[in-house]
Length: 205
Image (cartoon, rainbow, N blue to C red; front, side, top):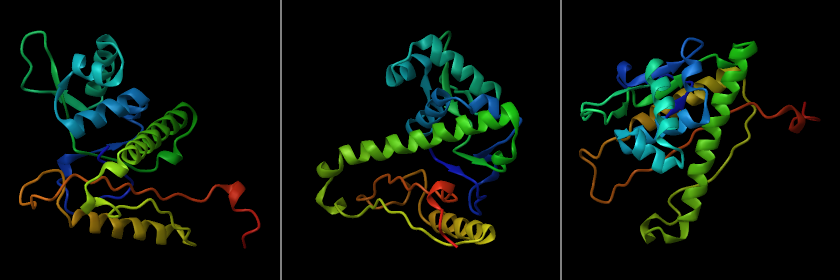
């Protein structure tokens, strides 16, 4: 899902991003909606019927979730719509979020549901990449990585680190093939940074 970030980027147009907050969280806090939005962003406009075939749902279910995404501003009707066949497209290329952890009660539970859906989406993408790993062209073998780094940081340092990472990512070509060499392909870069779970942090100073 391009992309979930708590850091505002410097080069991306403001109207190309939507921020998840208490006002629109209800519209996206569902695993199916997260997946539908990701499919529309990755593969372009589609219909409820086509998306149903991709997700294993029935078209009634996908239609319902698409209408909820539309209601809260995540998707819009595409100009390809003709008669009863409605086409949908993502209203923005990027999703950002801020301060979801501060939400309480039902909104806090929805925020957790949303973030778990994002994590599952990323894990699924990683798993599918591993399924195809050995079949990659020779030039791509060893070009990627699955790595994690344990750092001792302050909250301010972590925010600064993420800002620097996003600036580096934004310095490369994004979202389109204009000007890209013929050998270029779409690459997914996942950025996940979180406080180490308390149970694993015992005994540390």
